[in-house]
Length: 265
Image (cartoon, rainbow, N blue to C red; front, top):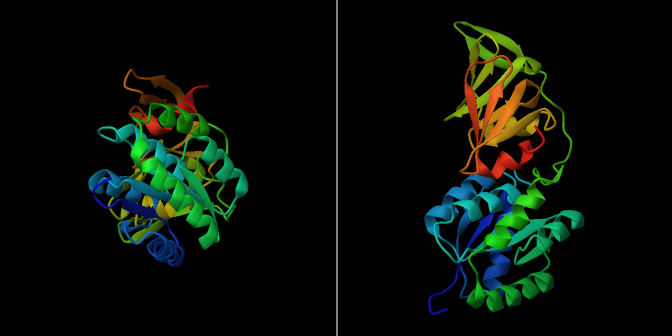
């Protein structure tokens, strides 16, 4: 390549992202690091806007995981060649599965300079022979459909039982199990039940890790559905899907990156 290669890092832990950037600059001074995205959604948006040659994706991030972000990036990338993807993870099993899904390489946390040096050599060799990415996309979709990998194996944590929603001058406790779906709206989330809707002052990115992942599935970058409230999923020719709900008249759109989870419905 004539121009200096450009990379984007996605890491929700700031210190780890800055450490990876410093190590890359020491090992590969010509590499231009465009920035550190704090989550998968930001990584997707920045990558599509900045068009880096390489993307380092932490597998475990709030909202879109690294696997989901890589799949969405491969689907939405406007033209060949695709950027090279390197997955960063603290778990061997996810790294190996991700590497087999046609990532350029993987790096285990904590990042060791000697191992990262091997990744740099592989990236330098691979930059001149990047392809269109059809095989990569197919492999990522297959990996994404495996139970437990969509979120990168996030560690268990306490689950919310109620949402606190402002209703006039009072605060109402909304039982989480009554929520049909959640929709992002800037710094708020619209929580929709069978009978009404509530506005909760929290971002969807902050809320999602506190919900039961077996019950609440992200179906779009701005929508999470209670899977117990889904009656039917209808696949579309464009790769998306439409969800019919058991107790709401509206239909929800499932983006292509998440549609594979509904094959069995």
